[in-house]
Amino acid sequence: MFPFLLPGFEVQEISVTEAEITVTASAISTTAVCPACQQASSRLHSFYTRTPADLPISGQAVRLNLRVRRFRCQNQACPKRTFVESLPEVAARFARQTKRLRATLKLFAVALSGQAGERLLKQLGMTVSGQTLLRLAKSIKTSVVNAPEILGVDDFAFKRGRIYGAILVDLRTHRPVDLLPERTADALSLWLRNHPGALMMSRDRSTEFARGCK
Image (spheres, rainbow, N blue to C red):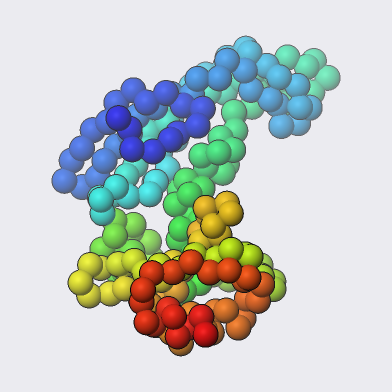
């Protein structure tokens, strides 16, 4: 069974080498919407391939080999004669990374410096430069973010047995909220002071997390 979803695509082949895992898939929708006039079209013009990087599996890099299509716009008044189908749930236009990979890189970019993030992500199967991480961090709009009312906190290994951090999760939506570069009371308490709003917290028996909550 394929270990994660590719909305709008049918997986056709999975190949594994020492360098990476390559997933080949084809788009399955019979129509696409023209971005200029918003009219649906089913007239195919041509095919082409996109190859964005995706989240790693067990520390091994993953590359998607996506067969997508160019459609002919059927609206005679539209200035666009052809258009490429969008992949709203998988990757942004022209992006070299899937949306879920980019979202993960942003979390690391905020939590760690460029060089530290580059070294750590390489060990986890995500090759990215420190400069790219810095650009991602600068691109994030700064705003006051409140903690979810029901917050979960747990530790996780950047590198098992050596480097640990903490992950914060909204337990209503089951979505990650933030990553902390360490699993200490000071790191957690600082985050809670800067992000008010948590009414209930779920944690393990870690004395560090207990002190951080207090």
